[in-house]
Length: 367
Image (cartoon, rainbow, N blue to C red; front, side, top):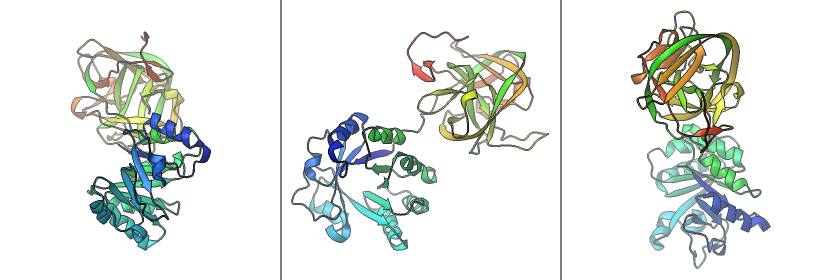
């Protein structure tokens, strides 16, 4: 889980509204420079006192975490020994090679490291994240806005453990929390048995080209209905007449659903450069990938219908060509035109109906 912290030191007259929003959005931490600003906060949020440019106060109030500047206040480990029950963290402003080494040392040894990178490049953060590998501490990085927070959460495929951001307006705390929770949950795949296939004539199909290499056991879930999808494999497996394109999934007819982000489905026809969709492997493990391009072209189409052991069904309309493939149990690669009744494919059968892509509990018949 990624941590979302908000900084209320400079929010001015909007402080009360921003704190109320942050609590409602369930951010993990609220940071202030005055212990009085942490009074009354519920136990669901960490209360963080940051003493930047200030001497140590006589009392830390009800702070859970105190972030210090060791040159002014002393080492976090020594302060933690003197004040049991309070966790201490180190603030490091990274401006050159020496301060970068300070940040790496903190990442390896301190319980909390609050990092501010003066320059916009994320390469120093990559170095600190690498230095923190296998350490038990937490890295929290200062972001100027939600867009930067999203980047920080994804640096080096691991990201900072958390982000501290000063909201510019009401709504920013919720957006930060949403960015922290932007990962997608794994899915429970089901073995489906093919019941029929049929050639259904010409139509428009979409190839989804992503900015990511897929693994051989990975693709995207696609289906004609929101309650039944089949795992379409990427073009990672060799073909006799063309080179592999491990970034591409020949996904299906343009009306089809696929999984996006934030629990939403998307039509293949509405995907475009910059869209985010969910890659899924044969074990149901997921990750978000970015669409680089969608190619929509008229092609012959084939309908595949399949049934789960409990009777639920899925159907998928693909390009009617041997080189278009789906995945079966164990990662078996199956050519769509060779599928026959009795063959097993991997699918996903969500229980929710959908309205404009969002899950909703209502009656909806799709057939």
